[in-house]
Length: 197
Image 1 (cartoon, one colour):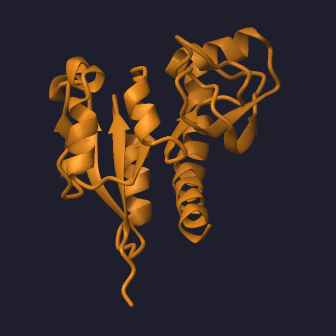
Image 2 (cartoon, helix red, strand yellow; image 1 turned 60 degrees about the vertical axis):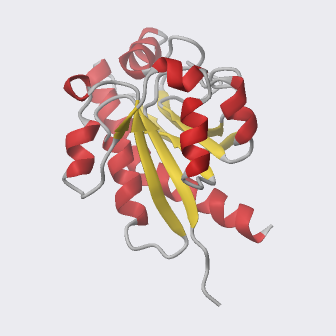
């Protein structure tokens, strides 16, 4: 009996490095199919289009109105999307989309939540806050997406030391390495658990 692959959508806002890591992880997978990659910014503002194109995957642009009025949800459902994963997606997820994919929508955050999370805490803002707080470690948190920013239950965390001479940029590099290494695996583990439970 052949396995019907779980169809996932990746939503991103920026360079797409996490999206690429996820795509590479599931390349050739018989159990997971990345069936949609979407971005809320135009091509001139986001590197993800070029990055995915080089992998033979088109990124679909959508706007804030489509996110809020259910247009994006409709597009995902029409493509038979089972799971949604956020990869550097900076917009707030509306309630209707959260409800439709509750327990099947993951995000990665560049700190050890609940520290340095919440509205406005993304990208370099997080790394600056970590350094300003003189924290000795940072890392990543994979968590379920809920209506509130960064408040869903934690699925997985990985830590790295904050070095004495770190800048926000150098810390960001180490955190990004953790994201690329662990986020795709955490997605795969959550899907596998869901499928067998």
